[in-house]
Length: 127
Image 1 (cartoon, one colour):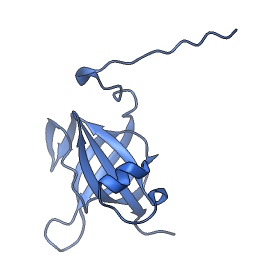
Image 2: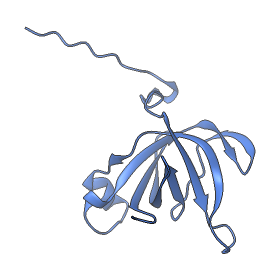
Image 3: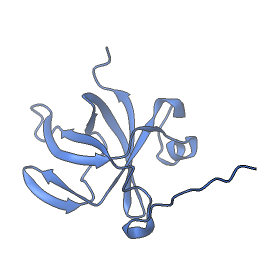
């Protein structure tokens, strides 16, 4: 018989995301119509995961759920326009999320308790 032991990680708000939110990211937003400018830097998010079909439907997105990925962000210290801020990151639909030098278009943003669920679609500038 095999005995399995699981370590549960508890963080404020009783979400087990703190240790998972270790991926560095940046957002870009077209603030004035002249081009994309970086808005948020030093973000910590979870890795990109496939978005469940029911979440894609709930977000009102079209197409196959296989086309979408999701990340989660929590209250954290990050730079917002050069100012250090402790808050849930201000990520909006239409922003670009840059992860490991790859840029993804933000298709939906949904609060999830004390977290922010970010659904991304196609990669910008596909090779």
